[in-house]
Image (cartoon, rainbow, N blue to C red):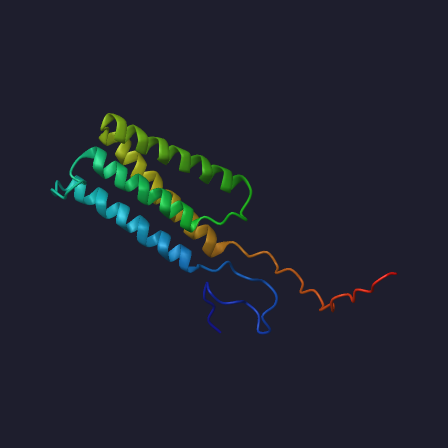
Length: 150
């Protein structure tokens, strides 16, 4: 039997669950690809409106990076890796600000590099980390009847 990242390991639907890549991971992938395309276009010297300068490219990449992180992040994740990825998100954000304020190409390279690393690390983590078990379903309890006193 072949196993895929989007399938459960057991026949009955119980047992070990594999974290599934969701549509959010797909959107984050597309956004990251767009950021890389903007960086590539800037590096290639293409004269695209608003993206031909360091500031323009850094601004677009920063906005796309924030959208990608917001889309791909799962707030239920905790631990040392989440803390490290959060720190790297701050590094990417501040590198973007430095690139915008001082028109620094070096900061632009740091910005895009960290964004791509964050996307790769997060996607791999989502693909390989087991999901926590689903909470047990509560039995149906009919509403209480109200009685009038008096």
